[in-house]
View 1 (spheres, one colour):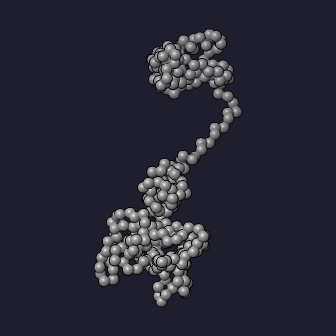
View 2: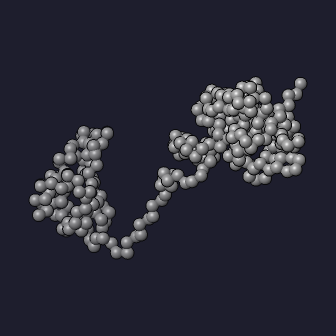
View 3: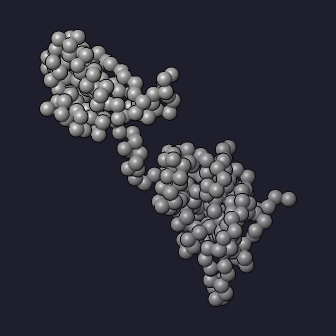
Amino acid sequence: LIEIVLFIVDSGYSKHMMGNLKLLINFVEKFLETVKFRNDQIAPILRYGDLVQGAVTIKRVYYVKGLNHNLFSFGQFCDADLEVTFRKSTCFIRDLKGNDLLTGSRGTNLYSITLQDTISPNPICLMAKATSSQAWLWHRRLSHLNFNTINLLSKNDILVGLPKLKFIKDHLCSSCELGKAKRKYFHSKLTPSSKRRLHLLHMDLCGPMRVASINGKRYVLVIVDDYSRYTWTHFLWSKDETPEVLIDFLRLVQGGLQAQVRVVRTDKSTEFLNQTLHAYFA
């Protein structure tokens, strides 16, 4: 026996609906809203699922108990970026590239689509589109993952908890823009900052290091001569030793090279801005 599933294309309903629970899979138990029939009877929508018929998969079809006809929502197709076209005797559901996904016929004043008659060499998946807030929420939850990959995870049901919706990128993510931004390179100086050795010294104190040296020292004082790029490295037990070690270094290097240190450039931290060094440089 071949079961023929007939859907009426309706512009008055906001969601796809049907009354046959046996045809739906991947249920989500959730109260959404209520539906009012023509006889004023009200029925709640307590769940929705996916309708699979052959090569066709319709996502997010609402189950309404007591509904005698299956309804395709004109609006839900449009929200999924699909085109719904009506002719005198037929109707078409197309993607944005103009490919026919579903074809229906007209009987009296109703347009209907029979899923059993739909023949396609490739699987067709009609997914409801996620709202903008849903799309960007999952974009952030997944560490700013690109939307093509998010849709792939959703379509193949790879990630637990990710709703089976079509996620649309409707604007640029400011965090992604900053993350991909590149800083412009500084242009090379035409004239060097220093004219000779020891004219300008750069220095910084690093630490405390997680791994101590052989002698148990966890701080490193690095001094670089701007003119020659020559580098000196001193290991310290604590940052309090910086003024004493620096003064001894300056006396030693100035005497050995017979040159005077003119400028010292630091990050202005407390190990360099203190009374001991202030008195020495005064």
